Length: 169
Image 1 (cartoon, rainbow, N blue to C red):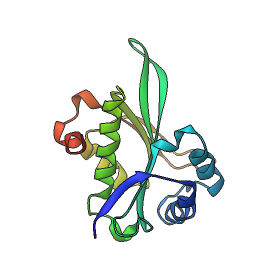
Image 2: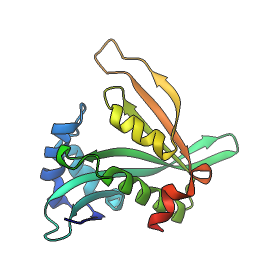
Image 3: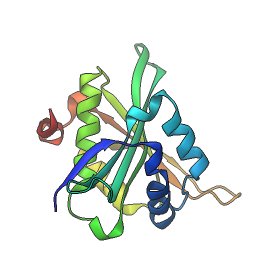
Image 4: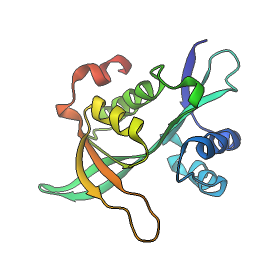
């Protein structure tokens, strides 16, 4: 069965939320998802669905653009907020495809840096991002309040391997 990527809608929240609860150690609530999909950032939250009915959601990706100080002044960057694929569909390239689509969108929008935070328990996500060209730029230890350790990763798109993003131009 083939899949396609499309912008998420408020009607997708229950499916996204169900996936979140199964695969994320820090699952977002329906309220948080509804808020994200209800504002102008909804264009940056995508779902991967089956082509036949467009109803079965296999995964999702959310990102946002922010302007941050850099060595050369202010720089517009992309922050990868969420990435998830249902367990039954893992290992089939869906997460890579969504990342590649996001990177292509960043290029179209003139954004050349992508950042992401990855929890220590998300070994698969860490490996995927590193395979895509992300580098670990910061490590944060687990907190005394129960937050797990995590890594901050960064991708400089102009330095990324072209095969990572050209398939979706």
